[in-house]
Each structure stands twice: as structure tokens, then as C-alpha cells.
Length: 133
Image (cartoon, rainbow, N blue to C red; front, side):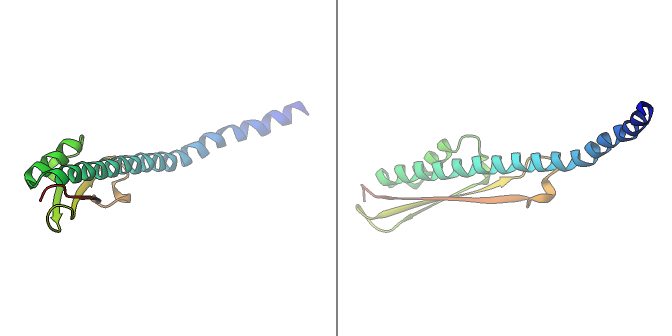
């Protein structure tokens, strides 16, 4: 009777390894996709913060190049060549100024590039009141 119990467990021993081998690629791809989404969320936060820094600078300065430099200095870790900064002023002092930042975030994680487009457009905008006119 003991002998039969051993025979049954021997045949089941390899099935766990086979199941693990079948599930492992799926778990790996899902894990890497979650990491890629996390990187895109980090980039989105940086884009929004750089737009806010640009709007702060645009509120006190009429020079759009200074606004662009403020955006670039706040966008730490982002590729400057993929950043597009737009400054829209509605009038003089007391009116709104809008700074819009668009960033084309690359998909960096291997094995999941087929799940995402080649690059993801991230957009951030901030509006502040101009103090100079």
C-alpha cells in the first residue's frame, strides 16, 4: 500500500516544473509591462512639473527663451530633444499665460515593445497669471 502512494507522487513531481515553465514567460512579460508603465508615469509627473516650472517663469518674465530654459532645467532625466515647449500669452499683466510641454517618451523595456507604440506622447500644461506685461 505504501508502494502505490510513492508511484503516484513520482508521476506528479514533474508536472509542477512543467507548469512553472509554461507560466514563467507570461509572468515575466506582465512584470516588465508593469515596469514600463511605471516609467511612463514617472515621465508624466516630470512633464507636468516642468510645465508648472515654466508657467512660474512665464508669470514673471516676458522672455520665452527663459521659460524654455526653466522647463528644461525642471525636466531632469528627460531627453531635451524630445521636449516641445509652447508658451501662449493672452495679453498683458494680469492675464493668463499657458505653458504646454509635450514629451515623446520612448518605450525602453525590452520584450514588451510590441505591447506599446514606438513612443508615447505625454502632455502637461500649466496656467498662471502674468505679473509683467
